[in-house]
Image 1 (spheres, rainbow, N blue to C red):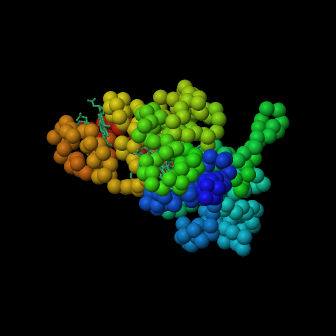
Image 2 (image 1 turned 90 degrees about the vertical axis):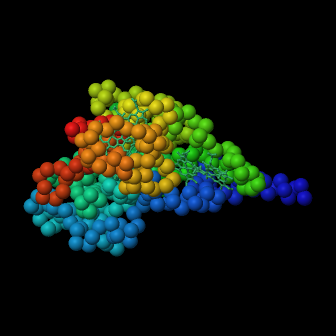
Image 3 (image 1 turned 135 degrees about the vertical axis):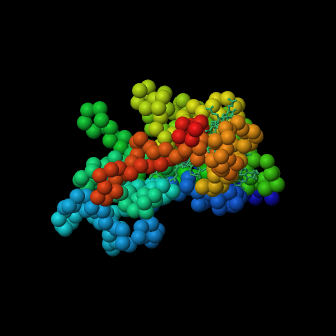
Amino acid sequence: MIIIMLSRCMNTADQLPKDIRGEQYTGAKTCVKCHQDLSRSYAHSPHGLTSMPVIDQELLKVFAPDSNSFNFGEHEKVVVEKRDSGIYQVAYTDGKEVRAQRFDIAFGSGEKAFTYAYWKGKKLYELPLSYFSAINNWANSPGFPKNTIYYDRGITSRCLECHASYAEKKLTQTSGISLDEEMEKGSLIYGIDCERCHGPGKQHVVFHMENPEEKKSKFITVYKSLTRRQKMDVCGVCHSGNNVLPLKSVFEFQPGDSLGDYYAQEFVGFGGGNPDIHGNQTTMLMSSSCYIKSETMTCQSCHNTHENVKGNLSIYSQRCMSCHKTTNHTKATLAKGMLTSNCIDCHMPKESSKLISFQQAGKEQLSPYMLRSHRIAVYPANSN
Ligand code: HEC
Ligand code: HEC
Ligand code: HEC
Ligand code: HEC
Ligand code: HEC
Ligand code: HEC
Ligand code: HEC
């Protein structure tokens, strides 16, 4: 009897799926077994969907059949075409095909945009066209040259550090001091999964499988026990912008770690003091007097990453009112209305990114990429 018990215990860990990140991990499929409700809502969340391999049928749902071509001037165009081995972005010059690359990976949940990548050997490159939800159409990928079709922008593991859960990479020295990066296709874990935010969970799972009567969690970081700084750092891993200098891969980051061990201080003068709005909610929020003068504000004051309340500005406004029970608005401001249902549009207005804009076909001017400002303040445009 004792022998059987023992072997059952040893087997618990062995029965769990292997995870490429290491012995301590087990993968989101295992978490789902006991945390069904959370997992169900999570499966549709932008974090979970922020990178994925392209499945043709899903891609076809994204774009309208009559919008599958983008002109770069009079002679050149890119056409999105379905072929036997997948869907391709095909470049034509004066009607003659000059290059074709397949959609292999999609970046972005499509809330605002999709950017696509193709594999060439062990490297990823960005496709010339991205899809922008604001216009329901293709546009030249952000930052790409205006009048030529470009297939050669490398996508490094840095993109995946913010948009996926793991990628194995190898650095090799090419000429002189420059380093060349290769990634193992089969090692990619798409989307941001449970263990990306909660840390490795195998020990937690083994414990609760063996002790089903235990209702208090063990061997997993309890968020409520973290300091304010630690809570901010968990989100800051991916939400503190691009003018930080990575010291090591943030795939290793676990809740409770200090972000300072992963990123060097922001470069002064490179957007420092005037951060861009894209991907930089942490810096923006921390410069708000709500953050500075309250002792408790974190991202969780307004966001529960496990539920999607996107677009429901009255729910967000209630979160403002949990601290601001009364407000001093002038008569003129009050006259504009929406005072209890929408604090957001006046105090966290949408602003256009200085780093990202996109070019539509046949248009000279770039179209803006709009994001919510996380610097909560009185904005001149809304004053009287
Ligand atoms: C065998 C069942 C089981 C599995 C599988 C499981 N958990 Fe849990 N988990 C529990 C129980 C029981 C609790 C405590 C009750 C509760 O909070 O739901 C818990 C609580 C938690 C908590 C809350 C911690 C706190 O107190 O704030 C987190 C976070 C968590 N689990 C993450 C995970 C992750 C990540 C995975 C996958 C790696 C996972 N769980 C897999 C049973 C499980
Ligand atoms: C591993 C990187 C990563 C971490 C860690 C992370 N995020 Fe995100 N987050 C992203 C990416 C990438 C997106 C864009 C998703 C998409 O494709 O739409 C995003 C989108 C969001 C959004 C907008 C979409 C939505 O769900 O409404 C919110 C809000 C958000 N994150 C909050 C947080 C908070 C709060 C934390 C900390 C608990 C956090 N994130 C941690 C990478 C991350
Ligand atoms: C983007 C980061 C992120 C991802 C991805 C994520 N979580 Fe969480 N999770 C959090 C944060 C932050 C909290 C704490 C919320 C709080 O205390 O307000 C939390 C809380 C929890 C809790 C405690 C119960 C609760 O609702 O407060 C459980 C259980 C949990 N997560 C399980 C999971 C599982 C299972 C997955 C994968 C399906 C997952 N989480 C994915 C950030 C994340
Ligand atoms: C430092 C983390 C970080 C890096 C690095 C990063 N992103 Fe993002 N990305 C984000 C965050 C956070 C968001 C969502 C919120 C925002 O734009 O502020 C986002 C949004 C996006 C979106 C729009 C998603 C949607 O549907 O709303 C796309 C597409 C995207 N990123 C692609 C890329 C690509 C391709 C790369 C590499 C060239 C990259 N990102 C590098 C953090 C990052
Ligand atoms: C965790 C509590 C908390 C939350 C949540 C919160 N605030 Fe604040 N906010 C504060 C504190 C504290 C101050 C500083 C008050 C003072 O100086 O007397 C402040 C200041 C402000 C100011 C004055 C800014 C300035 O620069 O003078 C505005 C406007 C404001 N908050 C709007 C909002 C809005 C809108 C929301 C929701 C999107 C919100 N706050 C959410 C705590 C909070
Ligand atoms: C005072 C409330 C509040 C706090 C605190 C807050 N956010 Fe937001 N956040 C919002 C609102 C409101 C929106 C807009 C939601 C919508 O349009 O549906 C938003 C949108 C976002 C988006 C989507 C991008 C966009 O511009 O649409 C991301 C990403 C995000 N928040 C991340 C964070 C992160 C990371 C933190 C912590 C550093 C944080 N937020 C703290 C209120 C807040
Ligand atoms: C129509 C735009 C508008 C809306 C809606 C709005 N505000 Fe304001 N708010 C302002 C302006 C403008 C000021 C500066 C004082 C003035 O001119 O009325 C201000 C001032 C403030 C202040 C600083 C003064 C004080 O009371 O200490 C806070 C805090 C504040 N607002 C919070 C909120 C909250 C919370 C909501 C939602 C319940 C909200 N505001 C809705 C425009 C707006």
